[in-house]
Image (cartoon, rainbow, N blue to C red; front, side, top):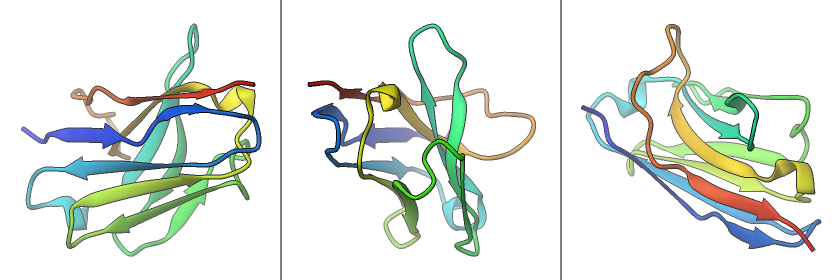
Length: 116
């Protein structure tokens, strides 16, 4: 079973930055479409950014221009650089494959809190 270990979250003031990392176990990392998701209290989990095996990226409109997703296939790692953070970005952030049906297994996630 794939293991997903997210890190890099924390408490930051509005306008601040954080960089999240996700280390993925397994040899098929480089072939898959990976994304960062988030789940705020009382809300459904949503996909905010994705990066294909070829390196193409896409973003939800709420984070476009502020977040940057990237991947390092040599390290089996997906990153999410988050700039100009807003209180509404507060959530638990997870990484996982982007596919249908949605993955059944998820990691622990990393908490991001944006507050003054």
